[in-house]
Length: 245
Image (cartoon, rainbow, N blue to C red):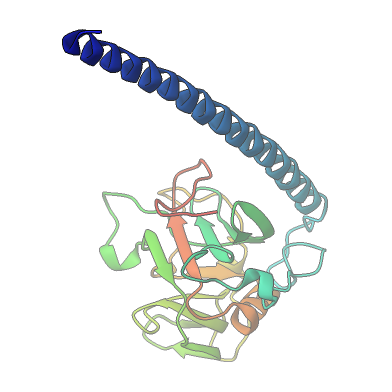
């Protein structure tokens, strides 16, 4: 065989081998990807089923009529101190809180799952006719260590029980419904808890999130510092942009 023909033959064989290897590799990658997708679809289906079950359970336990003194649900509060809810750098949303201004609800969450729902009272934000200090901050925050049993602000004429700060060391807080200087609930404001908010009938909470007396006490005593807080007024449920399962 001539040298030129031999080189052509070797090149042809190499091309055939490369093509065959590529085809096998692509087929293997497709199989692997198909298995991965099928596995993820199965996990998603299982997660969706669990999420639906949890929401049904919460729905069954909604307290009726709504109370500004008692817990929002008739079921026990979740044990958020359990190890499974400890946030890490890899899993920062094992425990987090979603606040919906549109629904006037606070959701204690683990990943995509809702563990507990609380009635809330917080100002919805409007572009016109509302001063900035009256608006509720939107976005992602974290609970800090500042918390207490009670306070009273004479300049605003009300205080609250069981508060926890989530911005600027106490500027904005999760707290109970308002109380007067004697510690008695201001009923006119307390009755806004969990109710629809409009521009005409908004909540004057100066950016804080109000809860029932029982919910606020549990929240202050149990929710750990650095817990992510996501506040929005979109009526659709959604996660923070950097949410991770």
